[in-house]
Length: 430
Ligand SMILES: Cc1cc2nc3c(=O)[nH]c(=O)nc-3n(C[C@H](O)[C@H](O)[C@H](O)COP(=O)(O)OP(=O)(O)OC[C@H]3O[C@@H](n4cnc5c(N)ncnc54)[C@H](O)[C@@H]3O)c2cc1C
Image (spheres, rainbow, N blue to C red):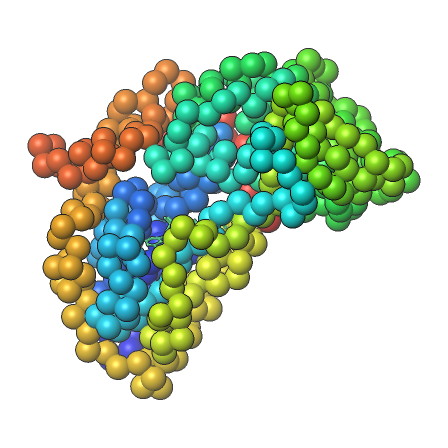
């Protein structure tokens, strides 16, 4: 697309894949436009850093193309600024020509069934954040126990099953947060059941994910699905049982959770399947049934209907779709912004980043060189067999990010090890 005469000043809220893909398309459209990405986290890249499984380094490597935005394409990063708390949303809409909301959808959806509050029920998203060293969730975690049950049959459910059952050697070359991994697995996990309401044929996971799980050493993956239910590749794979091992992973389809009880120190998931009612007595339940808007994030309604405000990624479509879907969404939205400016719906005259920087001085945002200092620190402090060891304390991240002693902007980066890269490129959904 040819460049428009007026170059707008654009702020993107959220540096996850949706925000970064949006910046790529907007930069193509306006090579000279001012582009700024703001994030409440001190480090960029949203769920690529804090959600995607730490043993899927191949997928996480998308950050290398996002890095180029800041290194070569004059996109500005401001980390550690929560819009709606540190700066009102209306301030952005007043001081930038265009505001893009790429803020994602981050809270684990809770089970819509009666649940005893004493039962051990955890959200898969929060668990994956902890395993990724996200400083906003990294509290001390109790062990998952020898028997766990995962509710949900999407790819995130399989990520969790793999993180809980894989032999420790599997994590070679990952950037898993070892403290969290050891806390969760302090008691040896013996069995993980995975239950979902859908039939096997309708389950949302990708076959590559099930294959990866079934190939783990010492993990025996099976299903109670009947041969007649489906003859697809997954049922054959699951009925063959994977590698022989001490850890059992058992899939249950057509199984609806009814209630969660807590009796004599045991968490119980009551379910109904085609054979009747059953109870799973477990140590913990992990819910992997999707995501919803967080109630702790500031409200965006004050600006949502303004003509210069656009949505992309999970914030636009809800929590569905993998990386590629966010790229398509960003392309579409970028064309909408182009059309709005061409048609004169949006006037180009704002102060942009200069106004934001003046407003946010007290919160000391992290710029891209600041993130590079954190990045270099994490890479060079990687413990044995790890690609990086993340800094999990906010004060420490801020100290490194704002230090001026060593500017590592142009330092060479160790290429991430691909020792445990899996063939997860076919992942299409959650
Ligand atoms: C556990 C898990 C595993 C996944 N694994 C894969 C995978 O293997 N492959 C794959 O292709 N996809 C995977 N996905 C899906 C992928 O992560 C999403 O498609 C993608 O991250 C959505 O991008 P987004 O930018 O919309 O949201 P996010 O990545 O969530 O980014 C939103 C950003 O906005 C910031 N933000 C929110 N509110 C504010 C505010 N008020 N002020 C400033 N900043 C704010 C957040 O801090 C965050 O950085 C996975 C998802 C999850 C949850």
